[in-house]
Length: 243
Image (cartoon, rainbow, N blue to C red; front, side, top):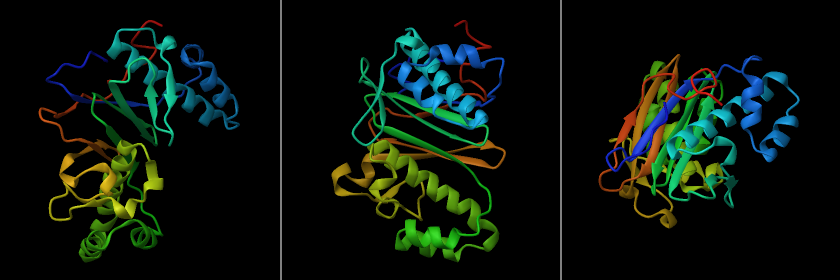
């Protein structure tokens, strides 16, 4: 359940299952802002429509609990490159990722951060993706692994790199090849674009959600920050909170 962030709990992660049920849909819909409702209405696929509505509503519910305010009143805008932010609470940073039936939200105060989760399913084009998105030392490390380990290793590197580009606010347009994870210590970045400081200015934390889903959190490495994983299914939903 959402709770205020303290100085001790600088970075928090919430996770939950996406249900996308008809019964919950009306309550979730009422929480959304008009622009979100307008975007939802443009989604033709019924299941994807309900999924979007639930994800956005539960994000609002969590942020509102953290800030002790009404989820409907939160003004969530997008920065130049698409990263969402709270207009009235700029000190509170957050990021969201979802895959399959899982979603994750990370929140911190005055600390840029990003999160990515991926379902680790086998892909036929892994070699091509590694060539395109991995730096030379990452690629060499990956190629030396036994074939049986390459799929999981690919997603480990991918989620770390994706979480970093989301933390910067630029997203994948920044270029995953230029955001390099240290193969010898995979909780560290080896190189990043100069604009975003030193590689040591950022920290990486891996996590697993079960069901072959892996994830990574990347955040500014400020003194006192630490990562706290909350128990499963802790994201608020309409069944656990009055709307």
